[in-house]
Length: 125
Image (cartoon, rainbow, N blue to C red; front, top):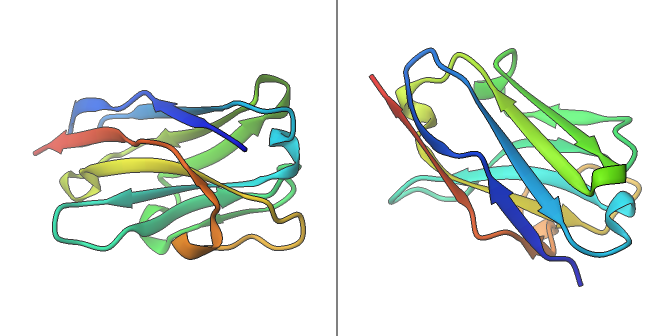
């Protein structure tokens, strides 16, 4: 079992930055691929960014490339999402998720076994 707790969300003006963190419980965090997803009211949950267990590969949705950066610190059981140049359309509930997969980096929600409760990001125009 892995428990995930997100933090770092908040209200920011357009063009601002936030850094989300997701702390995982359990001793096997370093063997999980981690992903960040987001969901807005009335929309499906969508992939934002992902990182392999060793940080050797990352993936991003096109709409965040060049603005967001995912990273992880396995010694701290933590994955981060640095979000720069935020836009009002980035407003959503952001979730981190864990996938017990050491071979591929998945981008669909169904592939991830464990989820946090989410942290709200609101970007004002």
